[in-house]
Length: 73
Image 1 (cartoon, one colour):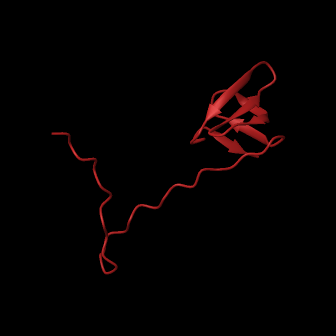
Image 2: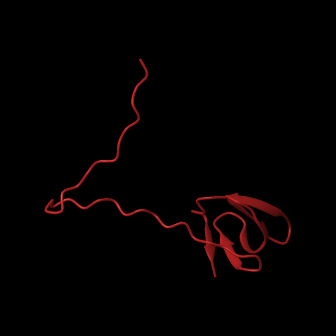
């Protein structure tokens, strides 16, 4: 017997508890200036399905989605 995956809780419209908001994944385009928590300032050079390639001057880094450490300037 295989365990069932956990389901998202259902919230009543009159419930005092709020449903967690769905986090929005930021979209990046080629040429966008960005900053990274570890690598600093960079520019997006390529866009992939679930990742972006960022040139930080000394190195190129592939950052995967969700982009928590990447911020658009």
